[in-house]
Amino acid sequence: MSRDRTTRRTLDFAAHDRRRTILVRVAATAVLVVFAIVIGVLILTHTDADTPAAAPAAVTESGALRLPADTAPTVGVREQPRHVLTIYEDFQCPICKKFESTFGGAIDALRNAGTVAVDYHPIAILDRSSSTHYSTRAANASLCVADESTATWQKFHTALFEHQPPEGGAGLNDRTLIDIARGAGASEAIGDCITAGTFSDWITASTNDVLAGGVSATPTVELDGHPIDLTTPDALTAAVAAAVK
Image 1 (cartoon, rainbow, N blue to C red):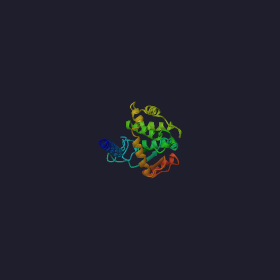
Image 2 (cartoon, rainbow, N blue to C red; image 1 turned 45 degrees about the horizontal axis):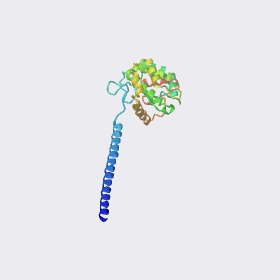
Image 3 (cartoon, rainbow, N blue to C red; image 1 turned 135 degrees about the horizontal axis):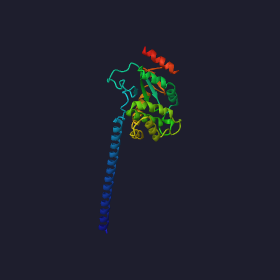
Image 4 (cartoon, helix red, strand yellow; image 1 turned 90 degrees about the vertical axis):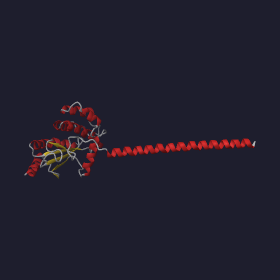
């Protein structure tokens, strides 16, 4: 009888040891899995943080789309224009639309006369005003067009404001943006860039840089880095003429 008890006790100890060994192995495996997940997340996070957003080829080092495009888009290519009119705008901004309709002709005349170069900064500060982040999507579409042709971009720029959707809705869908771009002269390939949001991350980064630099509203217009009189198109032309003299 005592022998049976001893045998059962021995078997119990053996079973206990096996269970403990299994639990240790399971715990060790779980720790390794968690460790691997943590390392993976850290690697992905580090990679994302260090990977620069895809930048449009058409923009200058300051993140602007310069027109005319042959007036030194980057530092060191050729002599910089003496006077630069800088415009920060959001394609969802109703006041930007009014600015374009009121001052666009005067700006075009100054640019075509070679009096100034114009730096356009399409930014996205009104994504909250649509349910589909229309500000970012429209800015992305404009840069997709600009990378094909700045001449086409000028037509697309005008058309985007003419077709500006009301705030609070979904905004224009990608199909409509593609159709407007094609109507302005963009190629069939423009659709891939627009639907993929190729420059969306770059626009977010550029917008953050602009806001950090002190721009807090759109449109913001500067001549050679200084605020300019925007009461009328004639006042704008006069201010530029005074700067040129």
